Image (cartoon, rainbow, N blue to C red):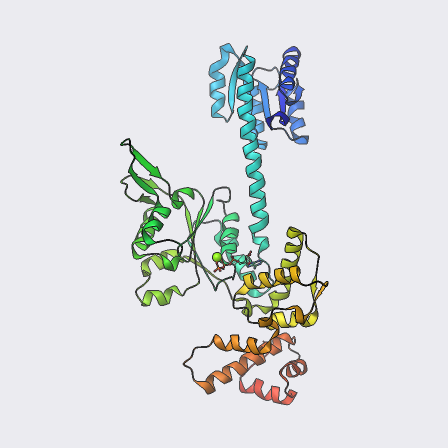
Length: 459
Ligand SMILES: Nc1ncnc2c1ncn2[C@@H]1O[C@H](COP(=O)(O)OP(=O)(O)OP(=O)(O)O)[C@@H](O)[C@H]1O
Ligand SMILES: [Mg+2]
């Protein structure tokens, strides 16, 4: 692939330039040869270039200045310096300013081609990396957190506020509420965005293997030397370590994590060397950590270290106004990614969707949308096309009741449910009482009586 790389060669001696151009073109490169540095730098503004080769001594603008300007404006382009034998010291000096390498004139063609080949490989790795980075930001940036509810606006504000610092962040919320998405968006909004985002689910492994997975391992190799395996903490160096389901950490690992947070260094399992760690720790949990603390299952000192900033994610049923928006977002995304036919939900179908409890939250909504896109043959998705648990009122009712504790005060609970249903109907009716009464199948005067009884005002 390096054959197609575009090389910019700058040298004030025209003859030399010509020789170089022929040599590189014969080797399969695309070459732009320019004998005036200013013109060459202007060319960089207009054209994508993979590697710059510049002479060191030129009358108006020196190779050093070319290097400085390229590094400032296009830091990813490797710059190769050509220098006469007598000025090697200066060339070595330029390495400190970020030159990729230098070659002394006169050079052997093989040496030049080898050095250039390595430089184009580096340029290609950079290009590849930038594409991946752009794809990550496209997929997981803050702008991918969809919703206009108060809850979602609060989340994006908190992400933006918390991003610049290295404070720990604890993300709480039911399954499928977007915890991982928020963790990634936080990383991408932070100054650490170019460094790794490493995740680890604490429920997946036994305590012993998890310790090694997190902190790495040191042991004796067959030849007697120390063998080192890096853990996730080291892999995330300079970046963010996301610990999912942090409640599942064993007591021993809780202590190790606490020490890591306090001391910013750690020891690998089986090792003695102290390893410095610059990582931001973000954790997530579906479980209530305070309850686990009172049961003695989670250390409170660790908890306070972990939730310097807490981002609670509301369940989808508490931000129903986002359901239609999210459904449209997933339709667009899935249609685009999988080349499916565009479909829309009928108003009736959407009513059922916004009324459903969504125990699996946004992930469940995404799955339902995908299923409808794949299975429904028509362009309109009707009520009958919805999965039974959403269109069947009986099972909706059942799933709502399933969420209640078995032991409860019946009269009190019924009143709470009645008040909640009235509030929901009002919101869904845009606060128009006649419409809300219609949703509930009661008269307007009965509704007004109940509004008073439960002290429900505007919202
Ligand atoms: N506000 C949102 N806007 C758009 N997509 C979202 C939003 N929240 C979550 N998603 C999407 O929903 C899916 C589930 O989100 P995610 O995996 O982050 O949830 P989670 O809380 O980590 O779930 P679990 O607890 O099951 O691991 C993902 O595909 C994610 O991109
Ligand atoms: Mg998750």
